[in-house]
Length: 152
Image 1 (spheres, rainbow, N blue to C red):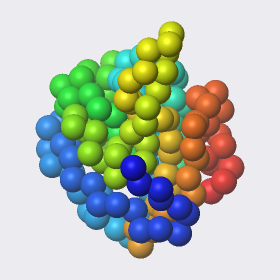
Image 2 (image 1 turned 90 degrees about the horizontal axis):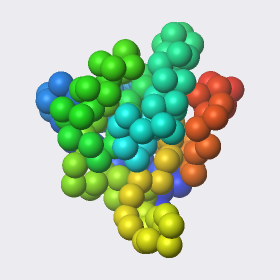
Image 3 (image 1 turned 135 degrees about the vertical axis):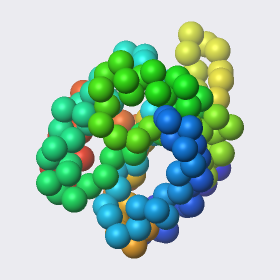
């Protein structure tokens, strides 16, 4: 379990995109990145969060921010999710949840008394040099995109 802090270098990411293409976080050096982790594509909270980022994507672009979403779903599920909701940004398939572990967001959760491992909804702002500028832990979906924009 990683305990990343603001000011730490962002751990490297090497995953497949929603289109099955390889993606490396370092390819976005020189740009500001909004990296958001969500539990599961096409579920109510994750859809709301992703659509909020979609609806504010022009404002993020104006602020020189690139949005990238990450969940444990395979690329084909990410592709369907992206297409269904017309998401204008890259989604990454973290099938073995290694990236979520590296970022400290793969945690024990509990639902109806059952314990299981899953994603703790978290957003990281990463600067052009690859340094974590801000961490939004335990994100509440409602108004989150606006909160991120206000911080920027």
